Amino acid sequence: MAGEAWNVREVDLTIDTYFSMLRLELDGQAFSKAAYRRDLMQNIDRSSGSVEYKLQNISAVLDELGGVFIDGYKPASNVQGLLRERVTQRLGEATDLRQHMVEAAEQPAPSSAVSLGDAVAVPHVPLSSPELGRTRVARMVDFHERESRNRSLGVAGEEAVVALERRRLAEAGMPDLAEEVRHVSVLDGDGLGYDVRSFDHHGDERYIEVKTTRYARHLPFLVSRNEVDLSEEEPNRFVLYRLFKFGTPRGGGHYELAGSLRSQAQLDPTIFRGLPNIG
Image (cartoon, rainbow, N blue to C red):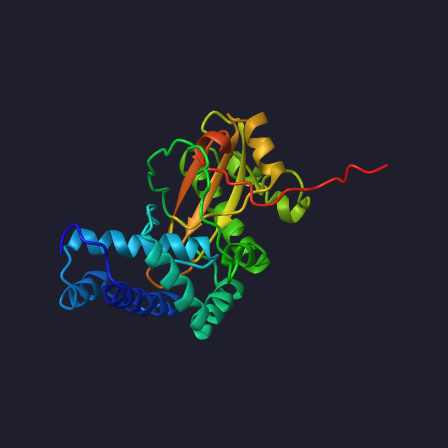
């Protein structure tokens, strides 16, 4: 069936497989994506690469709908119209899955401190131009916004970064600077454009903004205009720490985006502040 468009049966079986894995992901249970993919391929005549890409397409649609997607299935564009239609309908019918996403976004942070390891390397992805005439869909969950408002999770991530920075500086032979690492968002309040003040190996200040999620490393994060402006004003000092799979049983990690966020991330202006042109 290579080269033929996917039919409703194939699409629905693939969505069934994806949603089954997603429920386990939200529950924090371990599962084998390869095993699920093999089972799916026994029921549809498609190559492994084609199935893999279709699963990534589902991640893309879930992201459009404001939901969470499975770690390891990075959203892929060029989504088939039928797939977008069926994922949208199926998620609309899956009240339990949408509620599960909401509960996951609002779940309190782990009760014990979480230790962070070294940052993982991520490839630089250049900023691409917005798609013209892009498909518009109604957002069903707003997972990213809800998770960003989860102050318990945010503070826990920031505390983990404070501990990481103090350990890094102490191990580099700079214990005095390690003591000077400051959790500014808690001690000084929000509005500075960063959460943690630390130092580099030269002793110069670093302004660290922390974004934390329990789920996939590729999940979008929300940034404020203030944070973006600071990253442009202080590109040599600003760094964003993205914590992913934070506090999960299988362990998480983090990556760093240093410098201007306009060059280090694809910024999608989803909200504007409107001032009316009236007298």
